[in-house]
Amino acid sequence: MAVDQETLQQLVESVARFVRERLVPLEDRVAREDAVPADVVAEMAGLGLFGLSIPEEYGGLGLNMSEEVQVAFELGKTSPAFRSLIGTNNGIGSHGLIMDGTEEQKQRYLPRLARGELIGAFALTEPGSGSDAASLSTSAERDGNGYVLNGTKRYITNAPQAGLFTVFARTDPGKPGADGISAFLVEAGTRGLSLGHADRKMGQQGAHTCDVILDDCRVSGDALLGASEGVGFKTAMKVLDRGRIHISAVCVAVAERLIEDSLRYAAEREQFGRPIAEFQLVQAMLADSRAEAYAARCMVEETARRRDAGRNVTIEASCCKMFASEMVGRVADRAVQIHGGAGYMAEYGVERFYRDVRLFRIYEGTTQIQQLVIARNMLKEIAQE
Ligand code: COS
Image 1: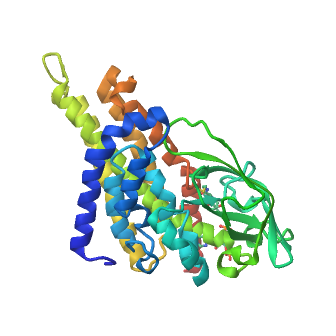
Image 2 (image 1 turned 30 degrees about the vertical axis):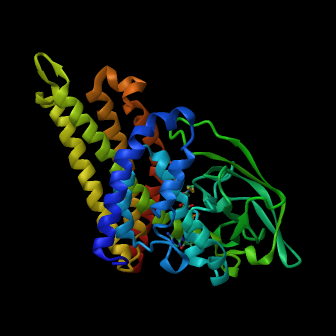
């Protein structure tokens, strides 16, 4: 355990209460205004949510993966936009730095990321490079002691708020694949870095993405993550392995929330003279959802445990991401069905979740990429036998 049981229990309970009392009542407003109110952001920072997984020596809570997923199981029981705000600082926006940064880079950025004073973003995807991340074309050309970055990054989560971007760029144009890629820590406000318009999305209003444009953006040599060229792609893959476990925990949480809402609705809503929960066809939908959410919860907890024990969990993380994100899609679909006409109406919020969860099957690697990762690594395993 990275923290003692009692501290963890208190944190999980505080987050559960915060979600129930503070965030759930704001869901509709956040979706309408496409923004999380500033006082809520401050309260999230006060709870330590921006630094959950940042090591204690840099001002975070230092939760291990098993502990972090317990928090995500609670924080995810509301609109994913709230979680998204702290998601990058605890995941893809900080873990490249935690895993592979130099001590000086960690000291410079992690304490502010942990306090939520700085928002981190992970700039990997490009207009021409999504699932095929190793084909990215943003360039980083050596110039004296520094580098000059050119290219466009697309759909970058939290970019409009971000103060620090982990930018993946090609330092070696002679190497077209993964080996030529390096990672850079680029601060917002650096000359040559600009943002596109906020993207208009299907769901998750309140969480923002946009393009990050690098136009002769000059950074000093110490912006090179870990002071090593050519290892950026591996950093990205390791960060995604970890991030996929967290996202899977959020999928479980949203599914559990939707099951709770559907159960309550089914117990109250009467048709044919009885609550619809008494009909076996409705019960089947509730039971399937409960069993699938439970299976995903067990997968996430076991994968987190294995990772904390130091095992390679690339396969398991992808299994979790694939199963949990597909599972919450099915659960959201059944939730709309159980709510009937009301499920299609904005005032009940179920249709909003239905749109929100669609993203889980896409970002941090589509379901098809998870299948590919799982199968490829299975083949590697037999080749090693
Ligand atoms: N951990 C550590 N290293 C890894 C790794 C992992 N999980 N996965 C791959 N690598 C290493 C490989 O071992 C290989 O190194 P060596 O050449 O030294 O053996 C290198 O990285 C290249 O790997 P690979 O050949 O598998 O790369 P590919 O281009 O074939 O494909 C996929 C990799 C498709 C898995 C990758 O591009 C991917 O995950 N794509 C999805 C990207 C994504 O999730 N985007 C979401 C947007 S970010 S929110």
